Image (cartoon, rainbow, N blue to C red; front, side):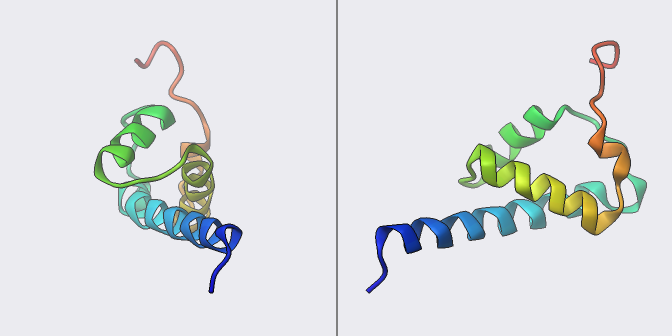
Length: 80
């Protein structure tokens, strides 16, 4: 029998992995960042359940996996 903590940890892991899997194709091959990080998070949430913390981890994992270091930077106020 799993404890509530174990269930929460497993759910968080699943959310991070799902977020990473969703972000990697968007970042691959030097694709430009078309939205803010918050807008990407909102788009992900429209498709599946993901917490802010899990999305933030997934964001970093996807950048590391793809080498899309330009996605670390914000779009800036002039770009919006």
